[in-house]
Image 1 (cartoon, rainbow, N blue to C red):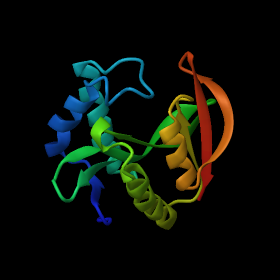
Image 2: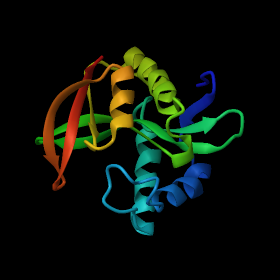
Image 3: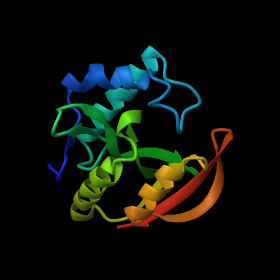
Image 4: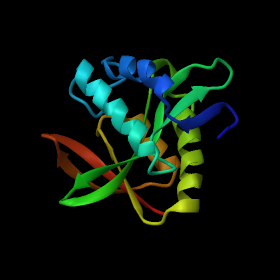
Length: 163
């Protein structure tokens, strides 16, 4: 799909190199991961993104800046276990130089439009309490704060959106 400034589309095999490269960078993985992924973890993460994009039309998708063709990161949903229940988590991650430009909001709103047309339920989102920029994105796209939680040995803020 196209937005004013972005192309947002499912990942394809040709995206593997870029995403593995990003998953290995500490700046890209700064929030939500204690360290960058290992090569094996990065490959497995991309494999999962690729497979899950066949199952869910608003799964994590590549964000491409239309004016440059640069792959800036991703936005979308993924499944995970939370409190002994399989749930959908919505998230986004951008390269450092593309943060603060409204790209996460723009891509997320486009994907949430897709979600509303094909799915009904609750999406969850988690952010690092120190990530004020991500909190602003979640507010702009309609998520509401639910509670502070302990996740993977660290603190996180839990947000939800019913669609």
